[in-house]
Image 1 (cartoon, rainbow, N blue to C red):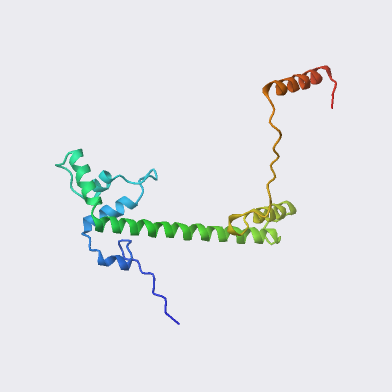
Image 2 (cartoon, rainbow, N blue to C red):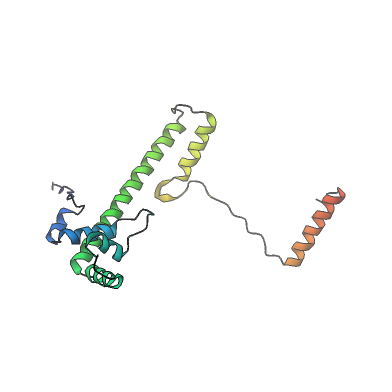
Length: 174
């Protein structure tokens, strides 16, 4: 039986395996800034990340952009960024999976009638939602779509005019 290695994360958010790639404090700050989101939830630009971590008081916007691009293209910076993005994606997937498990367990409680204020409508709705959350993302319920034969615009217009005239005169031809 093999022992599973622990999943260790350093204070700067990087994995222990990433320690081999030595970054300065400013470079690590730059990478973390690139991986993070701004207040609107958008990824930070190269220039903004550079401005956040380096002194740019005597630099033009063009110089900041050039230096940020050069720094971002370095292999050790790229490797750390890709690693942190993969780690972030894995965390998001774990979080989504745990949320789904919580939702399913709560729906099962409700469907069994063990919820705080469970009634028959809530049980039926819980069962319906559980059916829609079947394994592998599929649904136990099959949606049926009916496709009518294609018709030309003139026949649709005539049918609508006939129905309107029937409604206005009070007769129903069907």
